[in-house]
Image 1 (tube, rainbow, N blue to C red):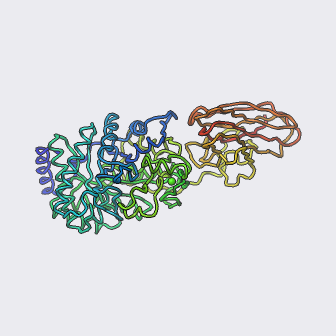
Image 2 (tube, rainbow, N blue to C red):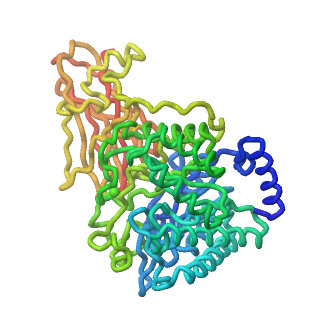
Image 3 (spheres, rainbow, N blue to C red):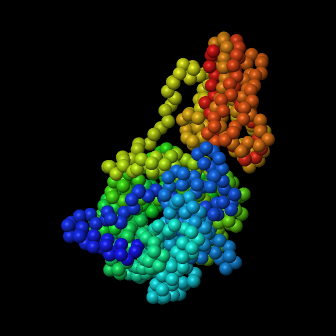
Length: 573
Ligand code: CA
């Protein structure tokens, strides 16, 4: 922040304080910030991960986020996340140089950056705040100097590359310590030094940069206020407090709202949510188990539940006077479905949560390493297609965040047992469980000519024609398989059969809808084009006198083709 502006603000704050008014309003950003942490993106890309836009076309994930109304990316910065041989620790291997590359790309798309300094060579959170290797053995005084120097150098690297640095976090979830200092006063000294360094850098570059501290454990406001008091004592000069809000970890919207109100009142600082997320599925996408692999309640574990959580957090933060929310792990999708096949990518590209090269540095990475434990909480599905939550971001960014009362937490929604009859034709569909919504799928017979089964019943609303479930296929190998149902109890007459199909990346493919009836075989070919472009093959004029027919789809296609079948139909005409 420029000195002149700062002085004007201080006078303004003083007047407001004397009047008993709300001192926070002046420094709040004009528009509510919807941000996404993309720290893993370079490693994802070098692992071959692909993302798609809402039309199903391959796209840069940052472009998709920008088009959805995301205004800020968040990037953690580790001092030196590499071993002595230059092998990365994982989770993006993200140092200042790699953050600079991403920040510059985002700037070209109009997105600003929140730089999240961990002041560690790897993960920093309440369970560990390990000092960077280069600072090991330093006194607190020496660390103050090193931290300030590093902060300015790293910011210079990002700014020189063209990054649009708008906010800087001095430490990550610094509730137990920072940079190897676990004494509250020592931590406060280091944070104060980091804040000063950001201010100096902002002044040197003539930029306004919001200085932030980042805390968690919302349910313990006593601890939060103790830390913020200590920062006051040490003269830490910052603008805002970022909070981590994960509903499944001891937090509620009410507590979040209360904390925001209290921090603004007690410390006269702006507040934002630096991290939140919600799972869109309980399934795992890469063979490495997920952190939240259960149903926590509160919201459905569906794309709609994820979108609702985002909207509720935004509304709650806005309603309590906060100014923004950042989603965590938004682009951390699977590099592939199979852990054994993925391991070399995780190790060489740093696309998993930790590599074995972090052994010996991070005390939490002694026994296990691996893939992404967050793929079921990304904002893109397992195949890289944007989820409903990004539609919600777009809507909120276009319409603004209603700063009314917090939206109540939605009751888990259960898909209706039967789709409401929209037309007589749908009402007379004779196929049982035609859209795979019912748990009992025993009326369906699927068959594979491969050693491995390439299909499953998938619960993704974005890949379903109706409801949330569909018959889904994908494999790393060439596929040949099908699914069919024998429909019984038919009156003598003429029938019509159809199915809905979508998907893409189809190579060497044939897709056929077929019917057996009264000793006759009927078929019609169709082909998937891209995501959400629903094909609707129909076979008409099928005479049936024997009381039953069999309807099915058989598919042959090359490896990594994919798609879903949904809403089979057999109706009398
Ligand atoms: Ca996983």
